[in-house]
Length: 467
Image 1 (cartoon, one colour):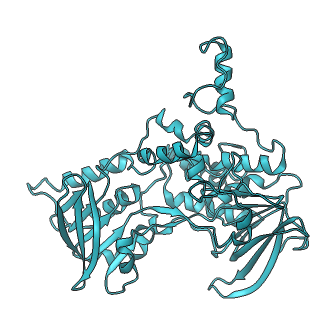
Image 2: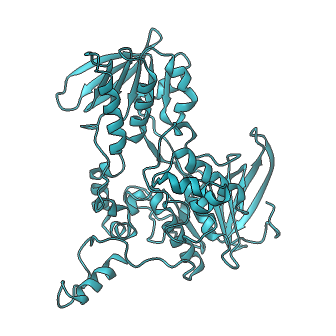
Image 3: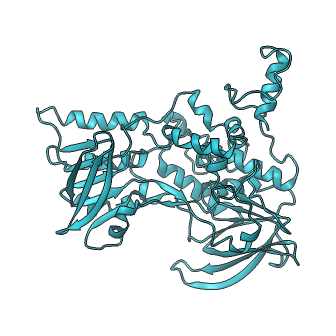
């Protein structure tokens, strides 16, 4: 650590991991009077999904969903401030773009990460525990060089922690023996660009998974293949290649109002509700669907159909290596019939799961309160619920979908959640947050008053959403 204080002197906050969410927290914490922080990341530099920065792909949220703007649009760490700092504000103005390229969002975050004074890259956090003598968390870490060599080890104390360790690619069990087999090409979409040239050299490629990543990979491969020799199959267990919910009122399920409503639901109700909301976060943008259909249609102009097969409602029940290729056993989830597919390469667009923090939090395990499914309980202010002697708070980011709903991984809630954490950590309103964020009233008002249509009823609705 290079701060001007002893490592034995507790900081107010140590962030573990520097992805977009903890980077948002670092940006909103910067300049808060008297607040001492450090954010530690094991990677040597900030990178955001580098394997999926495909040319032309855009964020699915407007540029206002940057690190800070939805809480503090005057912040020096906003996307517009980045454009000004890099001399690109006028070109952006004339471009009239509301949704920016993923590569540009990555560049913006790297700009902020390199300039924010308390972001430390190459710092691997190995363990955290509660130290009663210091009345703080002990954060054990190692400092690594750019090539991964351990340079030093140390311990920093912190009164509070913010875990933003992110997600990791999900590989279905049937594919796990093949992902480490050098004799076949089976890669997760997270590494797509790394393997793109290798994939383009294959005669036949299968994409598994029908979310946005699967659609973008399929479209990129389709555009790069000659007409009539596409050699592509797109397989999905979902019943259709369906659009993501993007209606104005539908998007209100990504507001703080809905997050607060979801949090107060019973655990069983939350668990039943989440799978039914798959189109809020597992669908495909309408623009990408249109681009795919347009590319396929253009290839029919000569009278032939492209050699590209789209298979919804199809589950991969087995995968094996056979004569240098990958043989997939497919089962139709509606008809029930089975067939086999031989392919030269597989791209798994099978999503991401919250990265387990059990090893990191082993020292706090006796104090963690868990729900009936063994998951950590997270309160409305993003804190893990802890028992025993622990007096500090452990805040979590993008590890609370089971308690806070589908908005947990959404960039549009990043700044709001960071402000909630800072307000809870400091015990004061560091950042003023709106009392209401949606036209929709989620749930039944706690006290509707004499008339649900009058002023008292409207006030009661706002109170209900704020709990």
